[in-house]
Image (cartoon, rainbow, N blue to C red; front, side, top):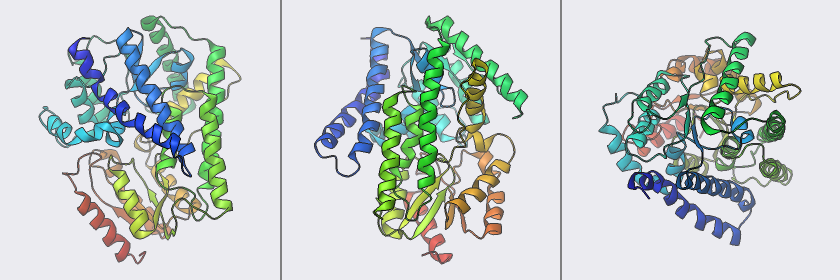
Length: 433
């Protein structure tokens, strides 16, 4: 195999070597929650293996951004990987061993240091040859300048500039006319994929996929309602997996719907028997922004040292709506609205600050939140502009608010000791602990 191709698969194969033994261990010793973790790991392994197969056998492979409708790709029988997925999976698995060297490599690129680290790392992965070159790239140009800058950088990369690329054109507004325009962009995406992969879209198949993912979304909503219980049924790991399960490879699969059913059943059992995964819960926290790579260190410390659980978080609280599958037009309209308005970061960063204000107000009341933590990722300039509004909203509703100031991936910006110190001072200073 060509050395460049082999290098592009090296991290993926390394993660396989890390996750496969974990699956074997959980199969032998599942414990109380192994039946919920196993499908996640198996899905990740299947996804990685399929990516390797596509590259090694010359099959169509799509690189996509997380907002583009995965239902369309599944209905067209196209395999994909998310362009920013490697940095998240790598932080949790084998790639986590490389984060220090990746940050050093990232620093050597001619990129402004105040640009979002997610975007800079994604560009580094491309320039370091660590991403499989796809048949087609489905890009994203919203909600921030960093995303648009990453798109431009890839389009000028020698290995990526000849990859056929489609970026849906996002209108400024969010009214029905704007969504209808974006639905037209989704149709153009289908035509683009058909042209460059030879695959066609069967509308009946798309309807089946969407109806199945609707079931998953409905169960996710039900699970989020159960999380309102005191104590909340699960710790921080499983709730975050709900987003992953509907956005990773293979949409509209009954097995994934069954996983959501298991999540709901397990949560109901824990509430009924008063047997939460995290015992001795004292505080309920809203983490309002995406989680950093090292979130496990923070969340587990909160649980163990302070009895503080993440009762709700921004990624889990996506305002997704079920899609009307009665006609072709309603399907594309629903997919467009979900892609255009509902995804985490998209929902908060584009449009009016009312989205942020309404989210915090509703979540703190519905989930009996004791404290709102805004990590203040340095790359999220849009969210930083809303920080004072968040603080005032929390004052108005009587909930303590902490703005940390940190980096999504780089602990050189704010060390773990600094982050924990700020949280500890906040919890003690407000009398919460």
